Image (cartoon, rainbow, N blue to C red; front, side, top):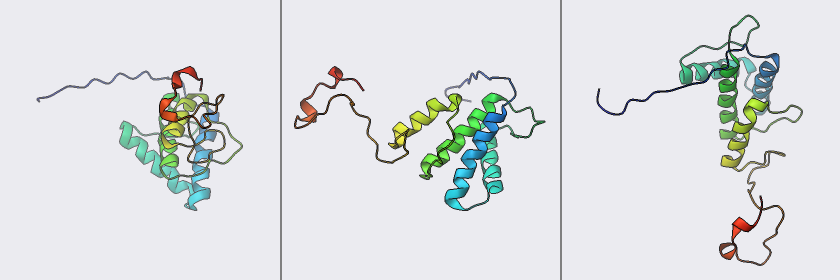
Length: 146
């Protein structure tokens, strides 16, 4: 073999996944069902298959499975990717789990979606200073907070 060799180091949370994580996954899949009309069983298998393709491991959210917290976080991120790529609206009433918040905010920034209301075309801008009639190219943005 010629070329660079790559080593991957992963820090795995070995604890078993929580019911809160399971509910979050099913809530995301429910949002996809509401938008597309395709049954949730299809989406569940679809994302399980995607997870297996990404990680090479199988996943299950059954009570007796030994799926880890880290595995379910990866699955949630795969589902969030799909939701952002296909512009599926989030239903209000559940919160993004702390383990997935950073990734959710990252996706909101890259897709220009407001992380609070979900509207598209959001800007990251200064909230305390209005530019008014000043020219954007002549303003030193380092003077202002975000």
